[in-house]
Length: 422
Image (tube, rainbow, N blue to C red; front, top):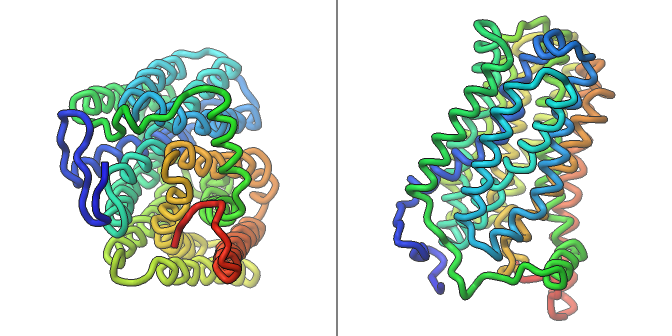
């Protein structure tokens, strides 16, 4: 399946889809994650009252989802490398639909934990395999533009999910949120069955056996460049997800908002994601990826520093407590497309596995943030801002460390055992 960096390859199946329609489909698949997380956040008190659970037990439904998401996300890519991208996405959507319907029907917090885990096991396929599909069919600036377009479309979900969830719980109850998500999953399953092409031909599929998988995962996780570059993306994400996980406390206790007012936080965050992705889309191919990433980090660090400075001197208030989140997510969306493609190109023959490993790193860190760090830091807005600044500084250090490591490899003129990028 050879193609030039700017020319899309033809899908393997008879289904032909243009780049915009493909972006919409992959973004819709990626939205399963934010809808599964953000939509039910405003319903936490309702779930607690209905199921007779403690606040911590309800919080752990999010942790259960994230942990299972992170563990299974290691396998989505390997499964798609072996059995095809399309097949794994369709099966995962079917499992997600069943799990979501079960979530709506449970009558104990323990069963909600179980079916949230089943949701997490199946929800990550679209995110991981979607990136592999883009890289199967496109390369260079064309791939970066398509990935940023997916991000732009996908970015509306974290904004509308908590708003819709708050509206639903105000007019009905938390079960209706999961029923709405079930309908979305069924419609998406039907759409993908009709329109999703297979991008990985049989001759390029990899064996699904313990020996091959062991050595493939070993190659990825032993790569310093993988950890440095994937870690930069993951820690930037953690800085944003800290506020997602802490939203019920940050918005309700510190800012005095109700469940229907979660948009005060999520609209600035998502607007930043959209605008940053749009900027990355326009810059793709016009400036070097490394320069684009550094511009993104300038926004990330600047926003985090302002956030800490404001909450050091002044009490939390609107709009100043949420405004830095716009600039933070703007920078995050400028960094992510180019850095993600560089990670995928480390091991071109097993991109599905690489995408899985990258998502695994992000989700494990996200689960740690949701289960441990957010509860510890959410007692004050200053603590949350300081945590975000810490994550950003770590991300920038990893990115600069990756560039320095690569330069040392090139200076020694040794073969790069970790892949070829940049």
